Structure formats: structure tokens, C-alpha cells
View 1 (cartoon, rainbow, N blue to C red):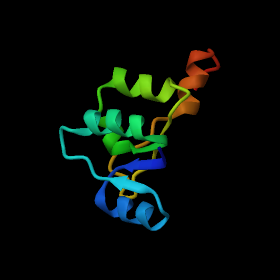
View 2 (view 1 turned 120 degrees about the vertical axis):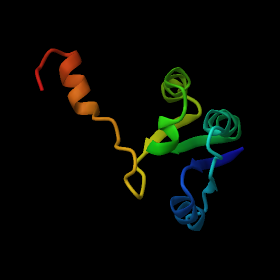
View 3 (view 1 turned 90 degrees about the vertical axis):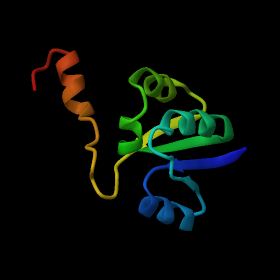
View 4 (view 1 turned 30 degrees about the vertical axis):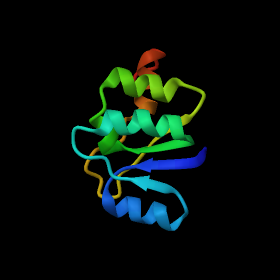
Length: 98
């Protein structure tokens, strides 16, 4: 089993490859399948925000909630898709205002 797999754009994938990570660039429309496959092959799956945005929300939520493999959303190098604002969401859910 591989230690880590990165799913994202070509430029970021090149950087991850230099760091020794198995980096993959999923074809448009094949992001959910690429995520499912990566989860069977690695202990850690890094998913760019853009790839994550193209995976059905339910599938992404299941992947992120699972303890193994650890699945983490990471920012895009080009910033095409913003990361979710987790702090604001938690404050709202706890009734602490914004």
C-alpha cells in the first residue's frame, strides 16, 4: 500500500511527485472514481479543492469522515476553488454568530 496519493491539477501534481508522492490528475468527470480508487491504494489521500468540488458531496463527506485512509482536502495552487470556511461554519453551528 502506498503512503500517499495526491489528486489535483498537473502543476501541483508535478510538485507532489518531486516530494515522492504518487500524484494523479483525474480526467474531468472521473474525479469520484479517482478518489474511490486512491482510497483503496493509499494510507493518505490528498485531494485538491477543485477535484473535491467535482466529487458528489455525499461521497466526499464519507471519504473525509473515514478514519482510514485519511482523506484531506488541500488548497489549489492556482486558487480556482476556495477552501471551505470551516471556522465560520463551526461558529454558526455552535450558535456563536459569525
